[in-house]
Amino acid sequence: MPSAPAGAARLRSVPPPPTTPARLPTATPPALAEAPVLAHVTRGGVVESVHRGSIAVTEGDGTLRHGWGAPDDPVFPRSSNKPLQAVGMLRAGLRLPPDQLALACASHSAEPFHLQGVRDMLAAASLSEADLQNTPDLPYDPDERDVWVAAGRTARPLAQNCSGKHAAMLVTCRVNGWDLSTYREDDHPLQRLIAETVADLAGEPVAATAVDGCGAPVVAISLTGLARAFGRIATAEPGTSEAQVTAAIRSHPEHLGGTRRDVTALVRGTEGLIAKDGAEGVHAVGLADGRGVALKIADGSQRARPVLLAAVLRHLGVVSDAYERLEEAPVLGHGAPVGRIVAVGITP
Image 1 (tube, rainbow, N blue to C red):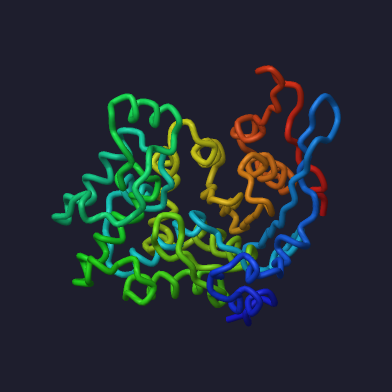
Image 2: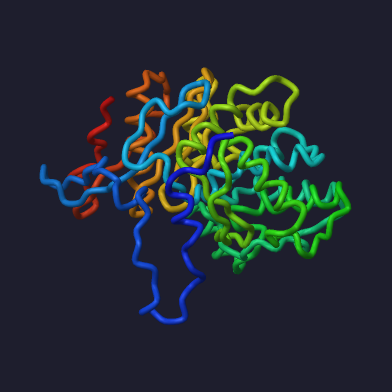
C-alpha cells in the first residue's frame, strides 16, 4: 500500500475547533492554496470571477495520469465517499435490491420514490424513520421543497438527502447485531469497517476523520485516491461488492440523485460510467476502462463543478450525451443570459 500523501500529516495535525477566532488555523492546504484557476465566470464578455480547483485523473492501474493543482493532498470527498461507504456495508453483509443500493449511495432529491425507497429499506429490517439519526432537513430539490413546505411539513431526517445512506447503515447494523443507537460514532464497528474500506479502495491511509453534514463520520483521502477508488469500483469483477455498487448506480441513476440532477444525467448519458457528486465542489467519476477522475473546487462552489467535470471528460475523449446538461451554466442579468461559466486550462 502506498505511503500517506504529503499533505496527510498537515491535515491530520489541524487542532480541534477553536474557542476564539484568534486561534483559528492559518495554514491553507495545498489542494486549496496551490489550486490553479480552472473556470472563468464571464459577464458581457468580461471575466467577472474565477474558480480555482484541483483535479486527479488516474489510469486503470491506479497511477496518476494527469494532475492539476495538488491532486495528492487530502480533502474531504463529502458525499462522493458514499459509493465507497456502500462497498463497506456490502462487505459487512448488507443485502439490498439494486434501486435501494443506489439510494444508499445517494444524495437524493427527496422525490416521492426516494422517500418510499428509504421507508421500504427500513421496514424490511423492522426499522422506521424514528431510528434515523441524520440531520433533519427539507428536500434538496427546490420543486420538492416547495411542495413539502406548502403541505405544512417541517424538516425531517427522511427528507434529508443522506437518509438512504443512514438507512443502509442501520440495516447493516441490524444484520450484524451491532448497536443501533451509536452507529454514527467513529469508533463504532460499522464506521471502523467503512474507514478501512475507503482506505483499501483508495490505496492509501485515511488522512483525517470529521463529522459530515448529515452527522455521520467523513474521512479524508487525496483526490488521486478518490479517483483510483472510483476506477476500481467501475471495473470490479462480477460478484464482488464493488460490482454490485456499480450495477446499482448504472441501472438506477435516478435514485443516485434525482430526475433533475446533473449526476443522474451524467450516469444515464455515458456508457459504463459511475459518478457521485459531493458538497463543497467535489465530484468523482469511474470510467468503464478503469480510469478515474476526482475534482475539488477550491472555494467549495457547486456552480463550476459540472462545467469543469465536462471539460475534463471531453479532454479524456469520453463520449457522453450529458455534456449539454453539465455545461448549462448561464450567468444572468435581469433574468436573461449575459455570460456563462467556462472551463479554462484543461490541457495535458
